Image (cartoon, rainbow, N blue to C red; front, side, top):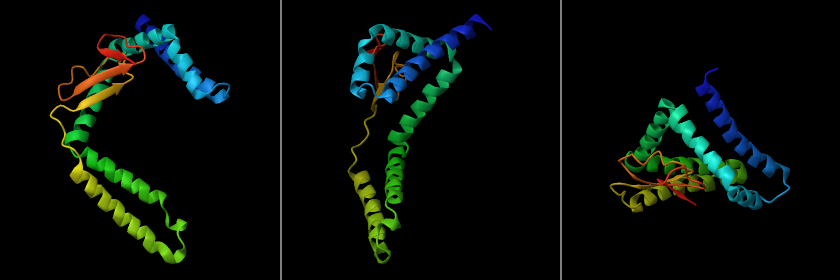
Length: 174
């Protein structure tokens, strides 16, 4: 196995182990989730190692795959703000709400209530779409968990990258 592949496996294994450890601590129930998170955030050595591992994986080992991820995210944000994506999301939420409210919840002779709710949901969508604020020329995007702010070069929007332990000065510590 090449040295490059070996390093990639080692970095990925470390990142996965951090996630696994957090899940394990949560599942055992020995500590409250807030205490687990506080403990995790106080371990600056581990946060630094995690941040450095993620940056190296993304910038050195993922190569084109990382570029594709950034491009996909960029396209998704642009679609949301200027390609009708926001409307699609609201419509999808409305359909989800309609599915959650089944006819079985109503007496057999009261299916008219469900029909009324369905109509109200469609009306609510159009009301929200008309009062939605206009999209700024460069929408502000918050990139959470951004150890090295990979979106800093995207010109269509302003990006604030935040992380518990940023790997570069282009990200902000939380």
